[in-house]
Length: 501
Image (tube, rainbow, N blue to C red):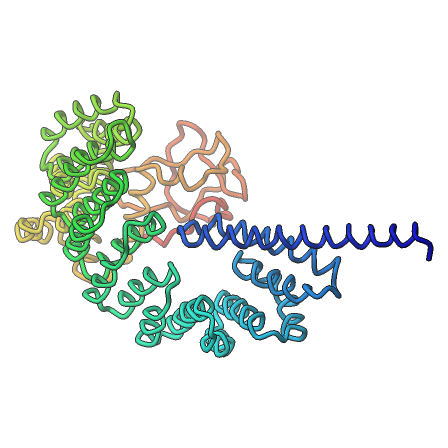
């Protein structure tokens, strides 16, 4: 071989080595970034970096399968795929790594990736088997990671005591929130509160703090969550915006449990903490009006709230939230003309405004406005659940004046075949049919309610003009004939209705 040929060959090897080194360096760089992001709690960003690390490592494996660093690249590929959430594509690389990788440290990393993918597939026993080697590792980082994964495997097997021990031995950032959740799953809110106190003021726990307090409220009650939040705010210094978010969430839980004094205090505190012109400041100001709405007992309580919401609507931070509540309030203030619309306004006050006392009074107004209305007994039943202090008097009116109503019978647990027909008539009068049949052509019409026995006509006269699917429609202005004859095929968009008793 001539000197020139040797130099050319040396140059080629050198270039190949540089390309290999650069690709492997890039893969390790992405993996390092991913680990730092995980430590800061940026899980989504970390997964993206792990995916890049896996792609770079795979390129090294494909282009340099016999290099002395091939096992390192293969292990990094497996690790990156597992930690980026691509376990569905990791089976073949994991199988190759199981066969070819022998070095102990690399084997431990492969087993950790295997366990993580087994957990993703809800195979906790397979995960626990794969963790035997890394749980005994001399490397503290891999051993800590194995303890965390072992805890997750124990949770999937409902062995909460074992999970707690694993999480307590792990130094993974995710282990602390996992420990709190495990205590909550085990029904131990006091232990969960103690574990929650171990969370520091790091931004990596921001979403965990909100989620864990909500879970604590669901398990231990809103008082437990409020007490834990107070201890947290007194112990660690959180950013003002996050403090306001946590206080607003706590206030909303208090509103849901009708603890309006505590809710109002939380909203006021959040408004004082949140920086001006932030969304949290606007939410806190609107939240104070929400408490006033929840306490309302009559329509006369709403105009001052509407005026304040109109003012807040002009504040940038509160604009969108204020407008939404203002629209709801202004919809309830006027007294509708028809019993059907009055009933809908009562439902709006109950379901959208969250004002139970006001909604209860509006349901009673439906009955008082038209005692013979089809809505009257249904409104009384709705009011019973909202006005417990007036239950006896409302139940007496229901049982004496509307004893034969299907709503009264169903309220007392008695069977009533007329109940479904009555509900159908109400749905027709309220326009529910239009909402259900979004594909109906513009010319399709539904019959208006008629006096007398309630319920749909079960037979259609033959002279009606056909609609889609064989259904027919009466001529405009023509009175509806009595039932008789065979019923044609029903319109596909109409729900099947029970027979009229």
